[in-house]
Length: 334
Image (tube, rainbow, N blue to C red; front, side, top):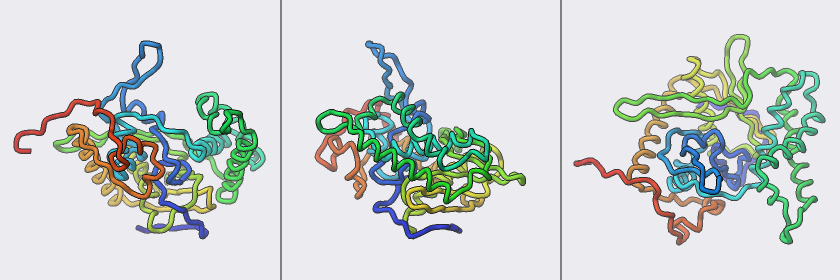
């Protein structure tokens, strides 16, 4: 597929799942804020708490597309049932590192230094903790007491990831056109419902020539060659959306792996993005069919060991919760 790489020998222990910040099979992320509107409108509970009413999927993001391809039942648990998942130290670290790399560009170019970037880590963690107090449990010992040493080690690991970024890119020579860019587009389909694609792009660089580079930071290790197609799926998804929005195929897709110090680049062409569009259309039709019938089959893989939903998964002897959406009867002759 024309992949150009600038890599060392770093290999992940498990294949990475698109849309997971840490690039680790154990760091699977729950639906993010940008996807909440796609999976059900919030309503006010009797006690004043915000709850989410089950609703048909209304959009597709790279993370949720990857979920369905990995395991349709996992997609249902996350998007339809909205089952809670335990926070992960790895994924949380990825969130903090992403925030630091975004904020660093607020400073003048000459001030974008490793000490400044590392100095942003504690503050971004405190902001995240204020927004999500339950994350404090990541650093609580068995006796319920705060584990300061564990937190200090975790923050130091985040700082090392931030510092490594400076060996891969030079922020003093970069002026991103967009950071944490929310993108959304609608793909119409003949004889089928429209498909809304949405997501957040870490960084978009635009050259004087108008060429566009999409950059994504990964705080895990670069994937082994046999898993690169999974890693690039997210990027070609974003390339498709940006092409449909702006009318120009991005010149380059770049994955920056802070965990292993690797950079993976790929230059897409129009024909490949059209193939991605067809794949997403077929995927959406399969999701709609499963939504109508309530048939969400598990797909066991070695990644099941990291899943939070084993207790309600038939593969582990569990029973899924009652399906919360109406079943649509198949058409006659269908």
